[in-house]
Length: 237
Picture 1 (cartoon, rainbow, N blue to C red):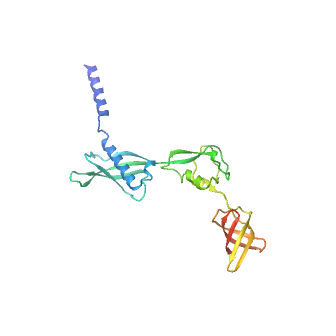
Picture 2 (cartoon, rainbow, N blue to C red):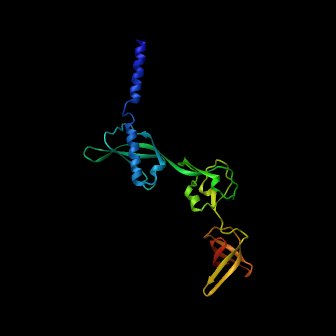
Picture 3 (cartoon, helix red, strand yellow):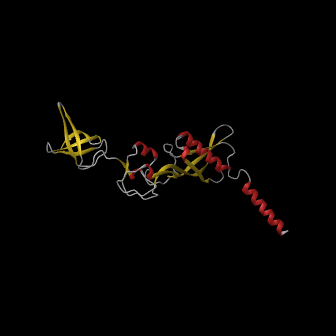
């Protein structure tokens, strides 16, 4: 008799755990959240994972479900609360509860395969790209397009250890000029047009305005860098 009772309890537990519809409310909420994000941010939905952490007591929908995000101007991130609406037989929507979601973000991010010193040029063989969660990533992750847009000419701004995940602030493009280097400054003012050989007084990237000094005129200028070693006069200091 005792053995039969134990077997009965086991069978009952198995039925409850496996019976269809036990997680149906959460599944409906998750599907509705995916649909809502797909409609508003179709380009990002493939890089998200949505987890339903909690649904309000008594929420047991029999029809179609919608969710309403509080901030409709940004992609939901991390833990967020949503209102739940259910479609009634007459076609109207009624608020019937709330849910707590966790929206995890994923991205392809550069990871160092070797140690890189500060100021070192990054070679393609120095990094790989891994699909990782960036929901609470500190800073902006370094994505493949950043390396591609810089034509592969990226340099580190700090010491990078093997296995480090790189942020956008960990790299910089190649300098158009470095402090102390010579450059050609094109001076154009009215009818006066001169090409002056100057010395850079600070590092600068293309389109930066930097201080330069001309030994020929004994004058300091501010000039805009328009290419490697080439600048255009902005003002005389």
